[in-house]
Structures are given as structure tokens and as C-alpha cells.
Image (cartoon, rainbow, N blue to C red; front, side, top):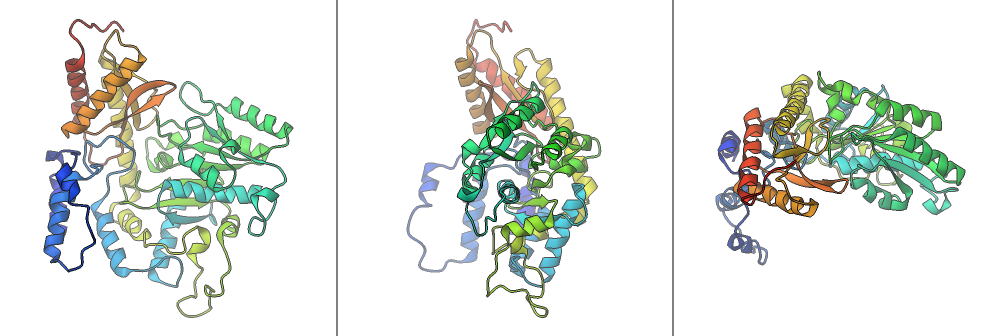
Length: 467
């Protein structure tokens, strides 16, 4: 299995990025559970012959779709070792516990958070956001939500985020009992960054109506365009208004370790809580994310519950603080090992250089788009996300949407590359997200060539670009 895994990684570039599974093969995945054992070789043959050829493709150098990272062999081997170790990171005085604590402290230092700040590893960015926002709600509620409910909060709590915020925050609002009405979406400027004046006005309007401003959710790397909210200015405003600052840094927080681009997220270290998605900037295999909180006491007070069967001891296996006191999961896998091994094997500087290179590739793609009359850039390129479309003349918005959707699907189905699409302020476009340590500039060049080729094939004879 290990030999095959290495061969597969070495031959990725020669394989399709993605291909659909035939219906006949899908039918083989229906039926009753097996009653009799089968040789492991036969089971593995199905993995190799049926699953691998129909994988998502995000490890491929020309997977340029959802922003999720490309994995890492060191991390994959670490996951195997972690599974063999079998430790539950909910608690216990173990070596795994020490690795977990060291990893969260390394991440604290990498993000510039102060000594004494705390962190917890979770399954990804959405859960990391939920951890930070739960702490924000509890800290700003004015009542003890361990013994009282959100109905006992004296004034309605209000959270604020840009109109580009990730959908996981709407889920968080519902989970926290605030509801989507408790999240005010703030307008963004021409570069899709939160408008500070609009934020300030919304806060003042809420205070005048008896609503309690609780938390600003700033985004360091929006999903649509990769834009980064003005973090230093938002941090100053939150301090002036005594509001919790949470930063969703799932896409961009790790730019903090990129030598040429760390300035893009200056001010992130001022956050009260920060969500990190380590699948992305560190290319850790799924799944692992991290929530960092400036106030360790507030962090623990949010999640710690007393149970007679889970008591810290002075000696023995339970003679260590329970890590589950900092999050929602009592059972926690040994996610820390892959991050620990990857950082030790490759070093922080290596990952920083990869991030710099991906940003440079996004700018290279932008230059190719600008140089092609048939292509239109749909948003400024801030980091590693590029939005554009093919624009033959004479098509209205609905027709352009259909035209570019078909381009996207043909590219996906060809296996040459995978990109996705989105809608920005009512206009549909193609979206390229570069988060892959295997991607080369020639992969970007090939993508543009294919978009132009397919777009030209689809353009009716006689239609001339009049843009």
C-alpha cells in the first residue's frame, strides 16, 4: 500500500484530475453488509481500482477548485502512525498530549499570539470558527450560559461580518441560538474588503436601539475572491467599542509565515480568537483545524464541564489537564501528530515559501487574463483566488453564465483541470483557487489555453468580441 501510494503521487500529473464513476461501478456500492471475511488483498484491490481513479482530485497539480490544500506524504504517514498509537486526545498524561500542546503552541507563535494564549485542534475551519464564536458569545452575554440560557441575556447580541463572509458563520449563528438575524452583513468596498465606516455606523445604530454589539467577524481571505478585511483598523475599532474580534483566517491566516506576503495579514495577532484551517496553508491531510484564543481562562470557561468520571488526578494516567475542556469533542483523534511531523520534517519556512509561490501564481494567472481580450477579470486579485470569465460579444448576463458554466464543466469532464464557479454581486464567473504545492506555472498556462480553446469552440460563428 505504501509503495502504491508513493507511485500514485509520483504519477499524478499524467492522470486525469477528476473523472466520474460509471453508473455500473456505483451500483456495486449498494447491497447488504458483508457477512463473510475477504482477503485484505481483494479489499485493497477495490480501493486501488475503484476509489482511487474516482477521487476528488485535490492532490493533483491542476486541481484549482475549492480551496482545500493538496495533502502531504509525511502527514499521511503520520495519520497511519496516529491510528496505530490509538490515543484519545480528550485527556490523559501521554506523549500524544505533549505533541498536541506543542503543536497548538507552535501555531500560537506562528500567528503572533501572546504567551499564555490557548488553542485547540478541531476537524477543520468551520469548527474552529464555532469554537471562537462560542467563546465570544459567552464572554459577551453578561450571564453565565452554563447555568442560564440565551433567553436570559439582557439585550440581543449582534455579530457583524462582511457580505463576503463564509456560510459556516450562518450555521454558527443558528447553533449559538443567535439566529441569522443576529448577524449583520456589512457592505464591502471595490476590493471586497469590509467597509469600516459601514461597520461603525451599524454598531452605533444597534447601540441606540438597545442591541448589544458582541463580536466582529473579520475575514482573512474570503472564499469568493481571497480578499482580506482591514484587520488593524477593525481591531482598533473593536478595542474602542469593547467588542470581541474574531478572525476567520481559514484561507489567509497562514500568510503570516509567508516572507513576501505576511504584511497582507498584519494585525491578525490582535484578534481575540482566530480560526485556522491546516488543510490549506500547511497541506495537512484531512482533517485538522485550530482555534486560537487570546484569553485562556475565557476559552476554558466556555467549554469545561465537571464530570465525576473525568477528574484530573495528581498521579497516574489522569494527571494532566483534559484537552477536551477547550472544545466540543470529548473524543479527539491524534490530529496533532501529522502537523508536528510535517513542521519538523519540512520547517515553517518551506510552507511560507509555498504560500508566496501560490500568490505569485495567482498574479501570473491574472496577467494572462489581462492579456487575453476574450477574458475578463471579475475581481481584483488579492491573494490566491482569481475570478474571471470568457466573454464573447453579444451575450447578456444569463447567456454568459450558461456559456462559462459549460466551459467549467467541459474542463472538469476532460480531466485536464478542475475549477469551479461563483457569483459576485450578481455576475457569474469562473473561480480559480491556487492552494497546491504541486502546481507549476505551466499548469496555469494550460488552464488558460483550455478556457480559450473551449470558449472559441462554443462561440457561434459570426459573433465578434465587441468588449
